[in-house]
Length: 127
Image 1 (cartoon, rainbow, N blue to C red):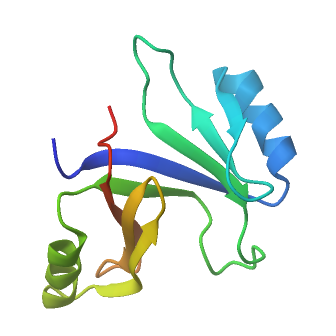
Image 2 (spheres, helix red, strand yellow; image 1 turned 60 degrees about the horizontal axis):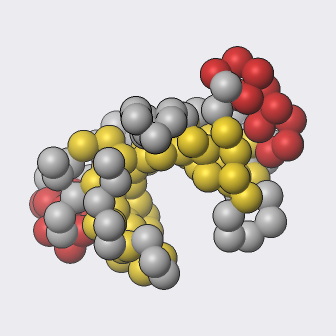
């Protein structure tokens, strides 16, 4: 189904500490993937895989500005159409279409309230 929540990302100052915390609290499994300090989060098992999660180093220090929460990405059929709709309805694309090899194409945008949102056309749709 298009336009469903497909993934979330946790930004952390100390990714290893954050991984230990979420392993203990939710029993999530963390798998190193891509650059150092970047993990896939498995929130479920093979029967009920849950939502794909990501854990990564915070991009900028927490100063009261910038992202301070979970970053969500929605699975879409066409990132170009979504980018066009965002701009047409008062939002702003902050990351133009960016290919991620073996994963898909990603855009990020600000909604009319300044919330950052992701939209991804996945090569293989998430379960």
